[in-house]
Amino acid sequence: DGNFSAVFHQNGPSKNSFLQQVTVPGAISSATLSWTDAIRNNFRSFEDPNQEYRVQIRNSAGAVLREVFSTNPGDNTINPCTSRSFDVAEFAGQIIQVFFEEQDNLFYFPVQLDNISLDITRRPSNTNPVISKIADQTVFGASVIGPISFTVSDLQTTPSQLRVTASSSNRNLIENQNILVSGSGTDRSLLITNIARTGTFAEITVSVFDLADAVTTTT
Image 1 (cartoon, helix red, strand yellow):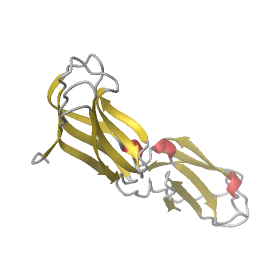
Image 2: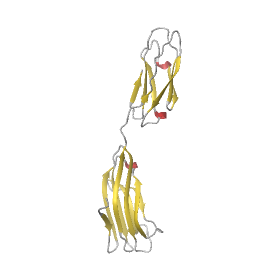
Image 3: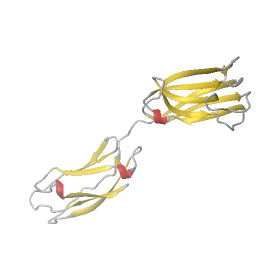
Image 4: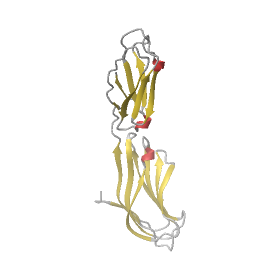
């Protein structure tokens, strides 16, 4: 938070580390680990792994899942306060350890850390898809109705991934297999064929499903 800082400081060869265990929620759209560090390597270069500063993501048992930052041979040995960040959304739903480690086997090597944070953006709750109104249809002696156009949309699911079905309340007049749903994306249509000449009324229920199986129906 900028009010406190942690410093790796040593008088001889050592490996210094600290960690924080956190739970990354499952229903998120983003998760960003960020921190500020200042590095002063008093040896002539960085060496892997004997003169190195590293930041890792580990699981709750301590196994390394990802090394998100490390010094490398050839890097500047003195770095002023530098802000760094890494996307950790891939660990959604997991308990992880944020692990900072400094290893100095060759010479004096202080590292200063501050402003460590994990910023989470939660995914909004799923909402039901939307389907436009479909007008009632009246026919006399026809065997085909349509195509009847309508639109579908959803806040979380792209239109091309929405699934549309249709069914009839009167199978003697209109069988389900004779209701053709076509189109893609936002624009869809119904074509009803082989309408029997018996019966007077059928209610067609049109349903649209999103990827979470939330459904909206219209008749």
